[in-house]
Length: 375
Image 1: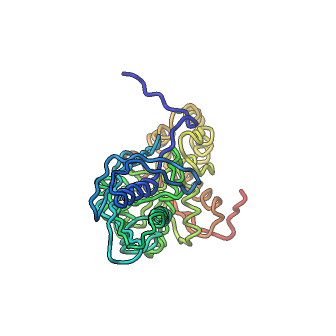
Image 2: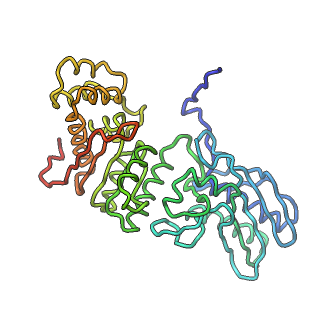
Image 3: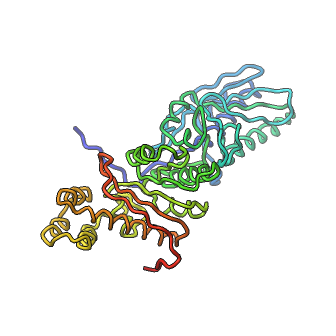
């Protein structure tokens, strides 16, 4: 089997947001309606200032209505909406002005805390502004004062939304039309960070002052199973962005955070590393050896820890030899370093779990004004 060669980040191809695609499809549909011909290619200006040309997959029109479909290209970004059909239907209306709404596959907001009001289609402010502006520009070019209605649809949107956080955020029935720049940066952290910040905002707006930050699906499932009385909004997958998620919680005045994760990522947090992607910081086995030493682990095992291949292997070693105090010390360090990162202000509970969701360690580090944050 041919080995897949990973691209160098500088060689990766940019893509375009759902908002940019929806804007392009709207321009093509509106021009097709007004010119009574298939307009298959349009150029729009993105928020970053770049002018980009989009090619439509399909355009249909009558004297009263036109529809344009474009295929979203997310470039080399692993985006759930990559290759999705983004559809804009434009029709004349008796009402004055430009009226924008979402159709099939575009979610509708049901919870407060998002940049879109409850009851409205999940078309975020920047894409909404882009669509409205391009429609106004075309109408003015044709000196047309008649009102129009624009419906943005994503035929597979409801299915795609299952791969996103939308249902947790209270966006029901499909995806969101997103994008602040118009471009999708390959493997960028901005989209994931934005989803974390949005999820925290929704949770707090809906009355959650105790949030559960998890590093992945398995740890999130553990948190949900062990805290059945917590609201679903309280569970937030932070991935590798521990520091960012902690700071967002502090900014929103959350009172307590429960961190749930496994040995690999959390052993880094215990050292004060707050971006725990495997490529950003390797596991420090000398550090784990020092933690073990503090838990009374003998020298022969300390040498084995220093020679281990993975943090998980170290955890297994500690379990097999009955050194449960190692996990308590690690949890304490995670809590302390997390509080230092945000300069205190709340309580932090830490769970370290195994692949089989067994609790290896659990500690609560309460915020104390006397805690030395400079250490």
